[in-house]
Length: 230
Image (cartoon, rainbow, N blue to C red; front, side, top):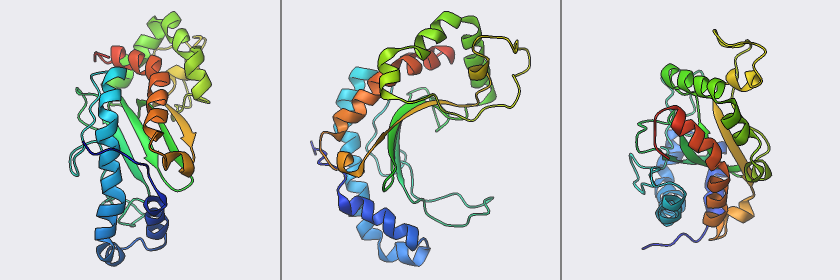
């Protein structure tokens, strides 16, 4: 089995360069470089993390495929966007729940960008049915949600629960509810930052797994809320 050795300087240099040359002509001329310097270490990382991830939860998939796997495509969907840059200027990996079909399902996540490396877990902009279920779970299980929010290992690893929020409480919820600020959220996720130097080491896999373990109380709650096993 191929072993991950780190995201080296050439990995991050590619994204520094594409930020300055975000056009199809430049990418075509540098496609082999992208394949070798970006795709290869990402697939190695996914393959290497699969076994320890299964010990965190067997329901999240580490799929080391170039297309349709855990690695996000570099191509941006610009059909309805004002920003017409064709390529993303970062790499991203999501380990999705086996019951999830898209990026809006609960998942563990790794963001790789020069000077902006993050990893953690949660759910981003879930569909209305899922966000309704999450809010109902928070509202009805106040003690359970408090245990998530007060978990020492979680709070030692992550600075805050993130996600865009509604300006007003969602319909049907008491503004005086003890968790009203969380009930207003449209996303629920945790992110821990790392440096390029940390990501360049082979044991970055262990760092990420430690983050996933620390995020597990949130992930367990979210999965239970949407009817998925953890």
